[in-house]
Length: 215
Image 1 (cartoon, rainbow, N blue to C red):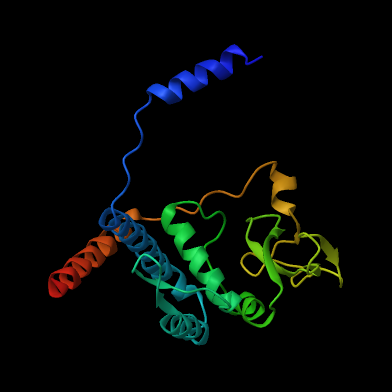
Image 2 (cartoon, rainbow, N blue to C red):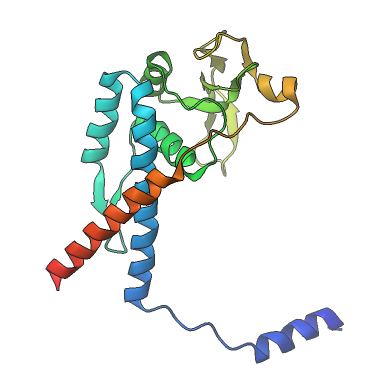
């Protein structure tokens, strides 16, 4: 017997007008808006992150990003992170997170940390924390997903951290050390969103110029 809740749900579905289909033009417009926002966040965030990095690593990230761009299925020119170096992906995600106001702890990428991200294909983040400032240090992840096993994970080699002391403040580093010590997450990094708005406006203007040229 069908319950009352199920019957009410069917009645509601029957009287709810269908959501109108999104036109291809509107779909592409939404995809472009999303990509512009992502690029604006990266550019504004990386402007703040780059001064904390070794110039060689800044060049490495920018060169790889310049090479790894493509047209996606929506006809938008996007960054392609398939098989990108982990340093590039980490710098990108750090920059976007900071610009969106979600990065926690110090917003820096020192040379000693960047080298690990560049050279270790199995590096991971967010577990090894400084007890005092909460900076997330990279660690080597020894676990692997076994092929054709339904996503099962096995430990094929030891996992280990690279740093005993924080590269930012010198405090001790350990697994979720900050969270255990302070009973909470590291503080959010304060980022000035004004720069994001400025970059977005420039990118939107460039997109309009491209569209008018194509018309």
